[in-house]
Image (tube, rainbow, N blue to C red; front, top):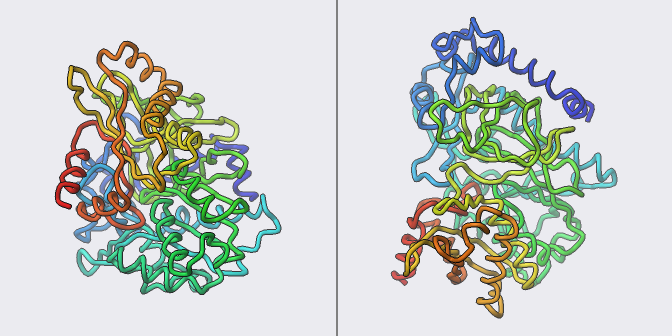
Length: 488
């Protein structure tokens, strides 16, 4: 807690020291030579010397590392690569994971998460039982004799110290199973007789697992199986659409804690259970820059530093890390909810937004509006995705494909309320909806249970670290899902 409080009180000094450390450490690498790190003294020098890159633009350096070359973007040996499918791309991304990134970022984040929880709940007893880790679906595989890859969760599980392994369930052989459907059943059978006190995982897949365990045991509430369960630590996607489902299956005494952990780094932790935002973790070997989203398409975008950010403005996150990523655009957008200390909320993905008529619908808008509508109608959602489609008389509308746990009694009224909630949240959407000229009222297509799972399976994206994409700027996913329905 002392270390956490230090960067909360002195955020800019911590980031400045980290910046100097990263530049000095990587000065002798291939990337450092190519970008003249030895001449970099200031943040402005850094921005001039190193362009912002996304994965495709940074990939040539990662390919060298995958082939076994060392000293490319970081001075210590790179052996591990976190496989990340991304949200909207079909091709896999491979993010280098250095020893420093594993120890000083990912593992440190896990320990800080527990420290922050115990700081708030001193009487907690997480260590009296076991932690259920609902990880990814990729086993460890090799590029060559020097390079290994797998989901980040698989890499973390593979390298866990022995004391953590004793407190984790299921066993490593089940946790690293590659077939998600077989793994789900194996996890259910292996964990339902354990004393589980806490759960870690992505909400969508975790909820499916809990429902399956309750189904096997013939109960409605997971606490009937795990009476000492007290905490669910989640991340990866918004919890809002799943909140009602978890409350229903876990009861009202369950505590929920959000984290912001990706293959590229561990970025945020919910440090106050009474708030719905996350503390930006500033001492994990990650130097942050922020790009205003109105510059996303600019040829020479200009990032701002942490001390320049403003409240409630959407920014694309740009990072330089002890994993050897430099001015890397991770594809997430955030907004700041507090500047002292720095707290954030994830608003979406740079590739996940709909702007067919100038409405600029972000993922956060869609998820918040859907959660409010579900609360009004006392229903809950398993998954959803949205895309724009042409309207019959001209213009466009937003087509929502939703898989409910239980569908609303009046889908027409639900649709109207959802449209109204988005208008209340997003002034651009509201303005474009006036007169139904270019943007018409949204429509909802109710999908049957299991439809999204089948679609994700067909796309080769089953498992804990794959997420149903929320928004897409064209009709691609609509066509894919309806082709799947036609095959039934």
